[in-house]
Length: 376
Ligand SMILES: CCCSCc1cc(N)cc2c(=O)[nH]c(N)nc12
Ligand SMILES: [Zn+2]
Image (tube, rainbow, N blue to C red; front, side, top):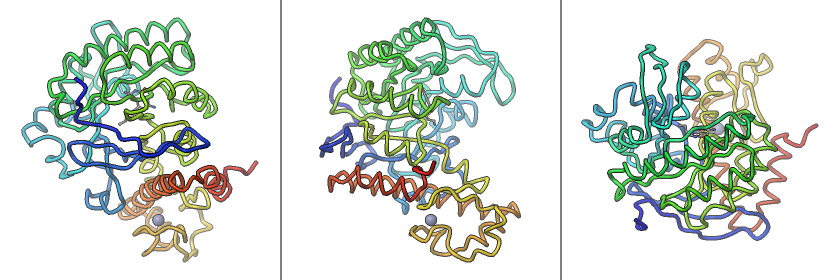
């Protein structure tokens, strides 16, 4: 069906790069792109309240089918009225399909045409996930955007293996479309795979764009490959995707990769990085990374980032943040997580403005210089 509940409006194409300004409309609101999506694996963006996510400008957040299936279970969340009600978040929610987590979290797994057999990372119990099951779980969780069940092979996997994997992921995608019970209110995205092989990326994109998905994800990247490889794959993959549907690059969230991805036509990004590194005291600032537990900050009574307008930077000093992190005080995790999320959301706001003003390349150069990316 072509009248999807999740639609994309292309507003402006950058004259000198592949960047584009747009809006994605979901049953829970319309949000500007390019956008960064905070990850809330277990129905919470760790240590941050929904109201705080809203005040920092988050539009769509992520949750994780695999984790929520195992705990507390999709039926419990369905009884609660779905993820939005369960976690008291009334903007957009996107869920991953679980395949990636199976491959990254679980050992003893066996991949067959029917699906994947594996052991729970929680208690070792035997589990089975199929394309149909992954879609049914997401139908019950009730996100605005759902992902097809895919296999994300290692980037350095053999050509023959990746070819077979891409063909199976395309068959899984078709089965998922068939199994989708709420196509009127939940948009389903296909996930393009193919590792670093251009012909396999083309095959995957051809297969998936022949099916009527609401949007397209670029999977199989940000899995440890060199960034230059990721950019090379994006260069020949994003042009294969429909211009008038959203493009989502999975698992990408460093400032440089976000900007490089935008310049290659990507609209949506997610990454656990900002909150994960925050919890061990690593923060992203306009002058590059600041590892706040470092002794040099013990008597540094300046804000974390003097150019940042976030709650953390307006109210607390580096010395205080260092004290909290060194003392394992939970409040410290909240303050660094808040700042890192705000930093990336604010970066994407500045990127959107740069596309509006046709100075994205100049913005990138200045941001890279100040962040320290150009240092040898
Ligand atoms: C909540 C996490 C969402 S993104 C997870 C993710 C991250 C990365 N890097 C790749 C993939 C992929 O290829 N397929 C799928 N389903 N997910 C991926
Ligand atoms: Zn800040």
